[in-house]
Every structure is written in C-alpha cells, then in structure tokens.
Amino acid sequence: MKQPGVTKATRQRSRRIRWIVLGVVLAAMTAIVTAHQLFPGTGKWVGVDALCPFGGLETLFSLLTGDGFIKRTAVSSVILLVGMLAMAVVYRRSFCGTICPLGTLQGIFGAAGRKLFKRRFTVPVAVDRVARYLKYVVLVVFAVWTWQAAELVLRPYDPWAAFAHLTSSELLTTNAIGLGVLVVSLLGSLLYDRFFCKYLCPAGALLALLSKVSVLNIRRDADACTSCGRCDKACMMNVEVATADVVTSAECISCNECVNVCPVPGALTVTAPRRVRMPAVATTAIVTAVIVAIVGVATVSGSFDWQQPTLAETAAAQGLSVQDGTFDTSLIKGKTSMAEIVDATDIQGSEFTAEWGVTADELEQPMSEIKDKYGFSPEDVRAWVEERIAE
Image 1 (cartoon, rainbow, N blue to C red):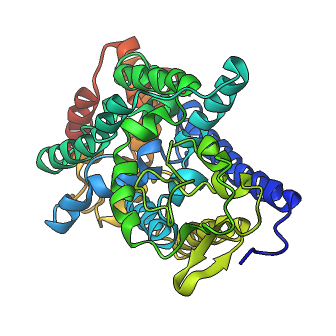
Image 2: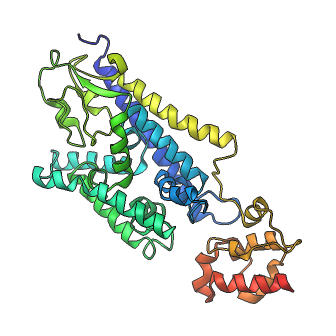
Image 3: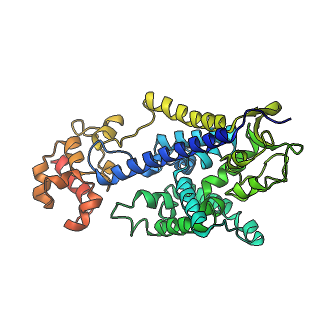
C-alpha cells in the first residue's frame, strides 16, 4: 500500500533538516575545539578528546578495572558514547548520518566531487568488499592496544583530532599522521563518498555491529517499487537498496537519502516494529532528540563539563590542598598554565616570571605552548613547584 502525503517538498524538507543538524554540530564542534586552542588559560573550553564518543570506549576498560579515566578522556566522553550507542539502538548508524562532524566534512567534499566530476565513482567491487573490513580491524587493534597501554594510542592517527588541532603548534608534530589521514579521507571523499567512514572509522565499525538490533529500519515495498534505481544512486555508502526487502546492511548510515529520493510514495519507508511507518524527517528528529536529551540531562546535572577544570578545581575535587600538605604536584601537566599553578598553590606569579623568564601574559598559556621558547619542560616546573611548596 502506498503511503499518502509524502510529496517532493516533504522529502526536500527532510534533507534540509538533516543537513541543518549536521551543519550545526560541525559548526559548534569546530568553534569549541578552535576556542580550546586559541584561548588558553583558566576556564577554557574542553579539548577534542573530552568531546569524542570513541574516547568513552577507549577509557572503558580502565574504568571497569577501577583505574579511572585514561589521560585526556572525561565523563563527557562516556556520556557521548552512551548517546551514540542509544542512537544506534533506535536507528542503526544514525550518529554517522545525522551527527558526526567528520562525516559531515566528508559529505561536503563528496558533494563537491559530484559537482566537479559530474558523476559518483565507485571502488571496484572485489576491492571494496575486502576493504570494508579494515574498519573492524582498526576497531579491534586500537581498542585492545588502548586498553593495554592505558593511553589514547589512536590519537596521533585520528583525523578528527588533527582537524581540532589545525590552529595548534602540535599539528605538524603530534598530529602529523592524523593530518595525513584527514587529507587522504577528504580528498578520497571527492571521488568516493564517505571514504573514511567506509574503510577506516572504528566508531563506524562499532555502530555497524550494534545496528543489527536497531528498532527502526528502511523497508522496500516490492509492489510499489518501480525499480528506477534512484535509491542505489543516492546511497553514499553504496548499499544495494533497490533489491532489498529490508535494508540490513551494516554499511547503512541511516541518512535517509534513499527514502527521500524515491519518487513513489510508500515504496521506501522507515518502519518501526509491526511495520509502523515513520516519515524520514521524524527519524532525524527522534535520533537527534535522543542524544540532545542525554547530553542535556548530563549537563544540567553537572556531569558533563564543557569547560576544562582548572588545576585548583581538580585538586579541590580530590580534596587536595597546599595548606594541609596533601597537594599532588603530579596534577601539573603540559596543558596546565602557570597562572593555574599560582591559583592552586599561592606561589606568586612574579616568582614564575623571575625563575622561568616568561612574560605576565604567557602565565595564562599552557606550558606545552611556551616550553620550547624558554627551554624548560613541565617536569622542570613541577619539580620547582614541589621545592617551593616544601619551603
């Protein structure tokens, strides 16, 4: 039976709303990670690692064994992981197709490539079939490696981390390999849509596995279908929709492009259990609401930190202070600024400028940003602070 009321305007509105969501997420994430790099000091925005749901998986083993969060991850990472997995239970890899900012970048490059080359290229089937398994290898290798090493071993190879450090001095050092992966992924997407998503993304591999238990799925009505093939041409993940009764491919990112391009109302629909049909735009609203609700509740309850805690706040949260002799200088990291140490220890800023030669303005910058200029390391400063506290 055909589904009434699904007009061309309705389908276009569905596509627009999805792209609005993608654009807002990409713009917001870009603004936050850029502000983290450009505006150091107390009260700054958290870094990319605290806003990465895959970081929640990377630190999971450490949390379960009672060792706490691995370096650079945070409660927010775990909350975003929960949100991402919840979206997958509702509608397959909808995080990839509706939220993921790296996916949005690839989508933009893919659209540019189609305009430039006037066609959509495909990887030879024999190569594509094997290459699709690479992301599962990446998932297993880096998850196990991270759990054993108790550190973010994926970070130097991560294209999104490299994107977040485009304005950082670490871009061509710590993030050089990730930058290379980012460039290859975006240039690859000019020819082959969602290049990184198809072949390399570990988060996509995790969601692909979970998509098998999704509540919502795309279903094709064979009686209504005219076999025009538009759905196959629209699918950026090269899923064969036109011959499927139900789209069960783990590659489907739930972008609804196939549904929205279908010219026959009811031929392709998103269905819930008992074959209840849902408008494509409703699924975008539902999965977006899922992650917004999870992050929103966590933010209101104080569990989700958008700003990086200062050294004094971290020490206070752990019940440590200079006054009672419990302050732990190991809390001083490369990302810590000397101004934060001043606030946490009451050592005067003038003592830092006299000892290390930094300017008053540079007291606000992370030590990792100025250490090479003055020839000291965070470890040197940490040892000096320990001596001063002892005095």
